[in-house]
Image (tube, rainbow, N blue to C red):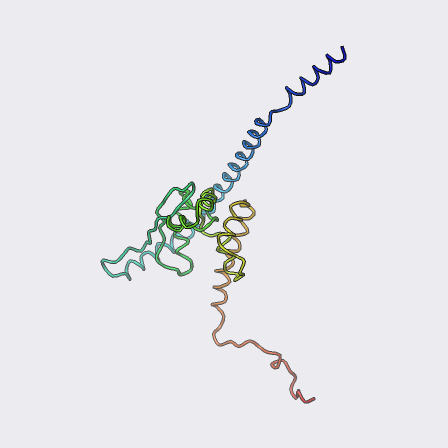
Length: 224
C-alpha cells in the first residue's frame, strides 16, 4: 500500500513538473516580452522627444534650408543630402539631412526619421550597405536588432580620445545593455557637448588667463 502511494506521488510530481522544452519556451517568451516592453518604452521616448525637438527646431531648419537654396548655384545638388542606410531588421531607407554642420543642424534635420520610426534618438550610427557588409554576418545581425540613432554611445565616447573606445565595441555594448536610463544619459551628454562649445565661443577674444605671478603683492621678489 505504501509503495503504491509513493509511486502515485512520484507520478504526480513528474506530471506537475514542467518539461525542459516547456521551461525553455517559457523563458524565451519572457525574454521576448521584456524586449518588446523595452522597445515600446524606447519608441515612446523617441516619439515624444523627437516630436518636441522637431517643433522647436523647425524655424531654424526652415531658415537654414532657405539660405542654402539661395546660396547654391543653379543645377547643383539640392539642400538635402540623400544616402541609403541600413535600419532596423536590415531594411534600407533613404537618410536625408541638410548639407550643413552649423550648430549640428544636419543631425536635427534627421528628426523626421525619428518620428517615422526609421531612426531612434539613441542608437548605433546608421551605416551604408557597404559598411554593413564589411562588419560580417554576426556584427550585422546584432546591429539590426535596434534602430540606428541620431547619437549614440560610440559618438559620445569617441570624443574622449580614449584608445579603447572602439566604435564597434561601444555599439555592441549599447545593443546588449540599452535601456531608458542609458538613453537619457547619452542624450544628456550629447546635449552638453554643443552647449559647452557654444559657451566657449562666447568668451572674449584675447582674454589672457591670470598666472600665479599676476597675484603677487607689490614689491614681491623671487630673490627674497
